[in-house]
Amino acid sequence: MNHLSVISPVDSQVYVERPYADAARIANALEKASQATLAWRDWSIQQRSELVNRAVDIFISMEAELSLELTWQMGRPIRFAPGEIAGFEERARHMAAIAPEALHPIRPEPKDGFNRFIRRDPVGQVLVIAPWNYPYLTAVNVVVPALLSGNTVILKHSAQTPLCAERFVQVFTEAGIPEGVFQFLHLDHASTEKLIGAPEIDFVAFTGSVPGGEMVERCATGLFKGVGLELGGKDPAYVRADADLTHAIETVVDGAFFNSGQSCCGIERVYVDESVFENFVAGAVKAVSAYVLGSSDDPKTTLGPLVKSSAADFVRTQVAQAVASGAKAHIDPASFIKDAPGTPYLAPQLLTQVDHSMQVMTEESFGPVVGIQAVTGDDEAVRLMNDSAYGLTAAVFTHDENAALEIGARVQTGTWFMNRCDYLDPALAWTGVKHSGRGCTLSSVGFEQLTRPKSFHLKTKI
Image (cartoon, rainbow, N blue to C red):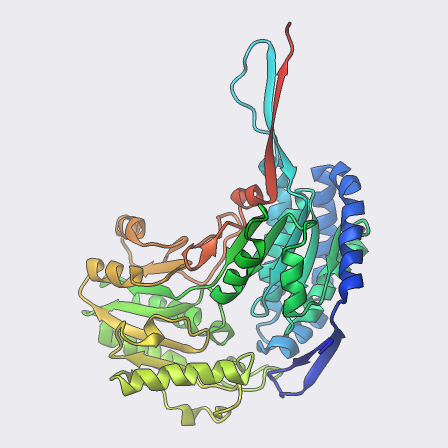
């Protein structure tokens, strides 16, 4: 098939169609990027930062239009779609603000007769492969620092959200970015794999599944190019005996069910101290039961469909397997009238009497389900949190900051939260361990993988 068709999860109808780029279009994009490289590097960091801020101004002026497109492409309820526009602005402006310092040359201690420094040079041409679940927020994490660093960028977005790639490039073009510096390509799988291996591409940033990350590594093997992988997780939350239960319930439920659970850093498993377990579960059931499952374009909807029927059926299978193995389901799907097997509309589910023999506690669900397990204290909670192939984020709910720090030092994770979850702070490094990937975005550290250190050793006295 030489084109993509976006089937909206809202009504299962074709929302938009686009042709895939052919070999000539891909070659032309690479040539344009190559031609634009030197001129773009001549722009100062201050000039690039000003351009990013102009692009963000244009982007947020289109909030209503972008939000509606987002809703119909991937199914997020319209009442929440503007939040991604705001998050895009927060991250982009923060990175533009810190770029001058983050990219400033590193100077060691003075040495008489020498001028010594390390300059941060752009890596070259960056390929960004972005997913559908947060199509702007995941892409901005790499696109903006890559451009600020002086790289050219080609954005390949998910076939579910092609308009997001087009809009991204559109606003930067309107802001005045030179031709060829930032482009998009709609690609099929075969063309994507070929582009990853193209000699013109110097760095590949991928956000998606573990199998997708394996594909990127395979295509880049032996080519000595950089690869950044953000591959999702099975993120845990631990509720200690001293936690503020009202806050913990509200925050954990939102962290598990926002975006219909389709978040790489969403809460997918919860460990609760046995002394507060029953009260936590009762409050969580009440909170989950209050969700409104409905069409995403309805302002009353708080839980939209999953992106595809197959994704919803995968979660249904996980739940059924867990229940067959002894788990207790606390939510009656019949109370959510939109729920229907074989469709992307799926009622939320909360499971107890779960353990790590069940896939719902070990394999990424990426849907509106969470398992809750009682623990005897910190040591058991840490053991269970670490009993995972993933390590993107983890959270603890407690009044004791010292305990949070001590527990966090023992948990294998890229980000450790206290009394919050499911959030990316642009001032902090976004990274993961184990199957959650490698590399880093956001913060000043995020500029490092998009630049090469170049040392200057100048002997000024002879």
